[in-house]
Length: 299
Image 1 (tube, rainbow, N blue to C red):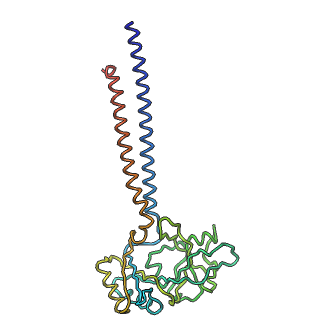
Image 2 (tube, rainbow, N blue to C red; image 1 turned 30 degrees about the horizontal axis):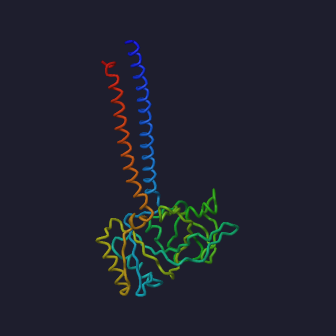
Image 3 (cartoon, one colour; image 1 turned 90 degrees about the vertical axis):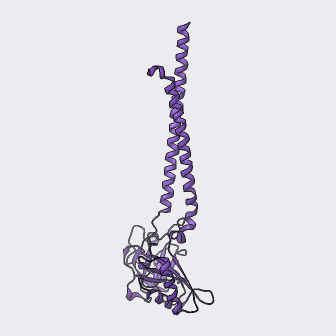
């Protein structure tokens, strides 16, 4: 009878041990899955917030100039604002991005729909002022301003759409009423994190359209000191204009697309830590139980 009881006890302990080990393996599996999942989600959010932009933000300032009618400066006023900004000490590059789009873009012998292509006319120094990377070819030279109607630049998405697997350099496109030769290909530009880079065609600006803003690259400048200088310089050139200076930052450019990701990041991290903590407590409890069950054996 005593042997039978000891045998039954060993069977019960064996079954209990197997169940505990099964629970331990399950706990470790669930904990591993949760932690790995949290790590991958966190890495995904990090990569989303740190996507290549194709341009630089550091030491860049946007100068918005509006006239008495509340509209952006146009023609001579826009050029006067650009000249005033360029004369401020420390400005390495300054340029205008014109707001008015030129005529549609056409590519000879192509059936690709180009109705959604962005059309941008820029003044000298635009690519340098924004620090836009040039993937192939070159940017516009000083002699190609004002618009001589013979050259254009395109972005990588445009080149890949029109000439997949080939080179865009030397290709002909019709833009702004002129047949132009592509002389350069810029990096894909991401102005919103949640929107794919646009297909863009650039032409040298003729200088007559309205300007959305002046972009200035001022190495080492701080908003507190350079902001008043820029405003004062433009105000001297255009006394009746309203001037707003804004530093180019992640928040000013990309906050709209980053808000959800910035909210998700801490939530995912918090749930990951909580899950890992609970899993750790469960594993500790199971291991303690197994050790207690085998204390006599250890002794």
